[in-house]
Structure formats: C-alpha cells, structure tokens
Image 1 (tube, rainbow, N blue to C red):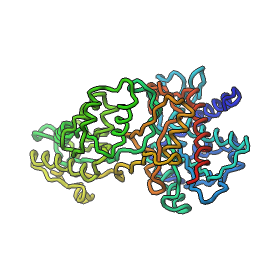
Image 2 (spheres, rainbow, N blue to C red; image 1 turned 180 degrees about the vertical axis):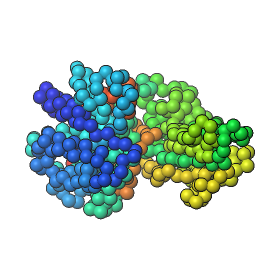
Image 3 (cartoon, helix red, strand yellow; image 1 turned 90 degrees about the vertical axis):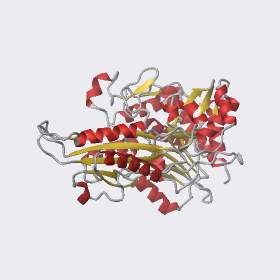
Image 4 (spheres, rainbow, N blue to C red; image 1 turned 180 degrees about the horizontal axis):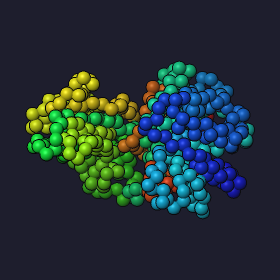
Length: 493
C-alpha cells in the first residue's frame, strides 16, 4: 500500500468521488419523494465501478434506497463483527462563496499536497480509504475470520434520520443488541499539543437540543406602537439567554479529564498550573465553580466547549412589513449538552429565563409540555418548543486496557504501529455528533477517529471554503484502516 501505483490510484479515486455532488439540505423531503436525493444514485454507481473486488466479494444491501451496507462474512461466526462507518453526503456550498474557492468545490483538483473540494475531508476521504483498504486486502488474498461490516449513510449532515437511523435498525434486527465488537466512524484527527503528537479517538459526544421560542403580541399600525414589540421582547429574552451562559465543568465521566491526566504524564509542555489543579480535582455539580475547567476553558472555544454546555442563537424571524406591528417573532437556539448534564436540565434553564422575561412584559409562558398549535396562535404569550428529537450525551466508550485484545488496546496499538511509537493515544470528546448517535445499542465500543486527517491541518476548510484533504494523510489513513481490520481479526474475543 506504500507503492506509487497504489498512492496514485487512491488519489484518483478520492478526486473522482469529490467530483460527484452529494449535498444534503435540512429541508429535504422523504427519500422517494424529493428528487434532490437522486444525486446519490450516481455516487453508488461510481463506487460500484471503482471497487470491483469489493462489489464482487462483499454482499451489498441498500437500506432506505441510498444507505449502503457491505458484509464480508468471516470464517468464525462466533466472533462479533467489526463495523466501519462513513457517510456519502456533504454540507452544501453557498453560492455566494463560489468565487472564494481556490479551486471549484466539485473539481476534485489535485496538487502536490492536497485533493480539493467539498467532501474531500468530510467524509469522502474516510469512505474511499475504507474501500481502498478492503479492495487491497481482497487483491492480496486476505480472508477474514471476523465478519467485517461497512455502512455508509447518506444524510449525516442532516442528523442521519433517513440514513444511519435506518441502517442501525437494520443491523440490530439482524444481529441484535450488543452484537458488534467495535465501531469506527469519522472523528477527531491526530494533533500536536502539549509538546507531543496525540491521537485522540473520540469516545463520547455531547448531547444536542434545538429550542424554538416564539413571542406573540397584538398587531396594529406601527404609527402607534406599544413600548415593546414582539421583536423587542424577543431581543430582550435573547440577551438574557446569552448573558446566562453555562459554567465550564468537568464531570468525572468526561473523557477530556482522562485526556488531561494522560497529557500531564506524557506531554513535555503540559501546563504546570493545569497539572496542579488536576491533582486536586474533585467531583462537582454544574452550578459549582470548577477551577480546573475554568482554567482550561481559557484556551478558547474549541477547548471550552469540550467541558461546557453551549448555546447558540442561530435563526431569527419576525415581522412582514415596516409599517405593521409584528404579531410574531421567533428564534431557534442550538444547545450542545455537556457530559453530566441532561436535556431536562437545559429545558428547565430556558423555561426559567423565559418566565422571568414573560413576567417583565406581562406575558404568559406556554412551556415545553403545553405548546400546541391552539395556544401558539394566542397573543401575549411566549411559547417554547423542541424543534426536533433531543439527544442526551452519548455513552462513554471504556478506555481502561484490561487486556491487549480490548478494542481500545487494538486501536491504540494500530495507531502507534502506523503513525509511530512517539504518538500518545488518549481519549477525546466531540462537541458535535456523528452517525454513531444511532448505533449506541449495538456496542459499547464506539470510536470516532479521523485517521486520514493531517495533524497540522487546522485550516482544512471543513464545512467552509477551500475544503481539502492532505494526500499523505489520506494514504496513511488507508494503511491504518487495513491494519485495524487485520488486527481485530486476530483478537479471539
């Protein structure tokens, strides 16, 4: 896999995959009714043409039309399968940004270092690396003892409700609960920190909650306005919400705490102040001050929100005409819930702030349990609602190495073998969510690991302009996947 022939072939496969536009949008209708899903037919056909050995050896089943599940049956049915995930879809490219791209977003342009285009990192690199690895294993006569499953959803960027959710149900019906040995999906890359090179496979994810708030007041002519319109009242509530931020707080179950402990031992430039606070850290509740969490939060938002619930006011609407009082104003707020906190706690926090604002303006609150359409049209109300299914913080994958055959031990060993013994492997947590949110019942051993991402590539354009995949990292990621498959195959459990 280190040959020039393989390298060039791998580059070409990813480049061609990027050229196929597989954008998904939040307003897509069900599969079969919305024609915008049809781009995925072309992508599946491309995979079939490009990976003949995979499609001639593995069994392919299509779930909800566009979900792709490949099964490479192992010789020992008593071994739980390995499951590798990736997704076919990408986030959209805003038309207004097209002129800012160095190379067009669906060009798949290749230079000496990178493959350019939307989806080159997120997540077509991981997807083609998986298929590259399996294609090579087949070509060299490898036959697995442990069944290998590949599952590629198609709407991960829209929460996976039509792709990964259906795939997870399909696999659970076939294999049952706790039936998979290990799952590896996209996730955090290797990165330089504390004076060392760290591999930080994500073993947990924060929770997710979208809250909608609507303020309704009487309409009328704007020449005789009240002291505060619905927009003004909503603006006040937004200010209150943004002023009442959550505290940084490290629950004992938060993987970042173990990452800090690992860094304190192995990081040559681990901060002395953090090391001292780490020694004296104890369990606290979210409303209490956590000096350790407060200190590490100073590093900036990327670290702060690993240990703190976030709230982001993302969408606002209200008013139709400049000379008519707005009868309704609405906002959508996204919460990412810290480990140790719950969806219900966040809802009660929002309710408390909304109630304070309602009292100030002599309004009534329709809380989350009383926001039917009949009450939503009443005036002088603040109505709270959940915009889509909430998600609690994920279960945490165990990382204590009780034996060399544990999934975490296999992952760590594979990582050191491929990237070098100097790599320090420590658990991580993500502020976002992947398709693994739908697979919790299949295994406790879930890792989100960006094995094909350049550790120095902070400016890689993920979800923005100039997304690009480092070529060396992509090829190295393919090697990692191949070795991980073989290493899991040697484990007897």
